[in-house]
Length: 116
Image 1 (cartoon, rainbow, N blue to C red):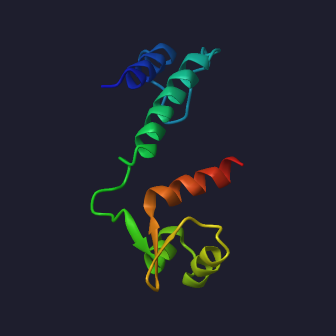
Image 2: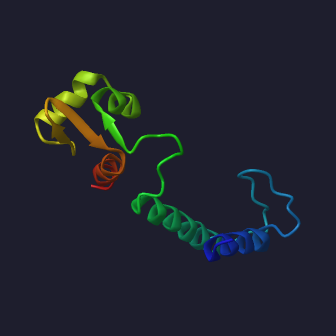
């Protein structure tokens, strides 16, 4: 178990040692969520580092996608993928007449768009 996960478990136990709170319910005695939030942030950061290292590709999912696969992945029309690639807005490589997209590069590109 990671240090961040242990910190999160310890913080949750400190907030609700008897485990009475369910889901997002928090007991009335809780006045300081800072340790819990810090532990959650550490856990999320660890997950982001794993994804950035290229280890986050789900099993069975290809790292390289064509335009049709990317359209499904993004939930957009195939034409939208070609439009963005044609304008150079989305990271891609051309192999002959085919456009290829790296899943990790797309995820990174999306993250940059959300943060900016």
